Length: 102
Image (cartoon, rainbow, N blue to C red; front, side, top):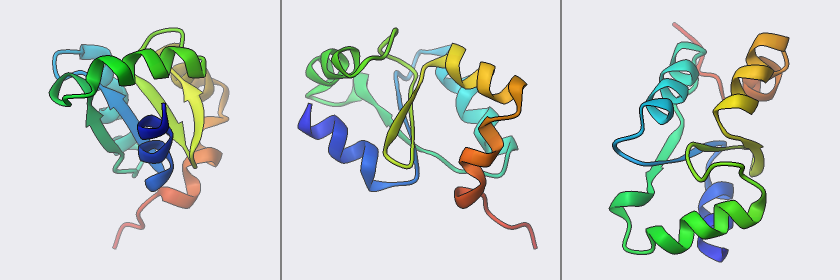
């Protein structure tokens, strides 16, 4: 669990993903379209991936991937991210991490 919490707090927007997960890809693209470049950790490519998956479930993710952290805090999986986006509460969370377009 220490590795997950450390990685989740190192950058502003972090997604724990699996390389074959289409929902992970969709969440990543959503963030990019909103002007945020998330840090993506592919847990299926990590030697500690199984332990990381268990840690994400213990932290409260209803599905191990995608697990989205903003500002070091767990936002949740696809359902929570999309619900926040549709309700208008996602963009204010992302504002500090958006890149300005020149």
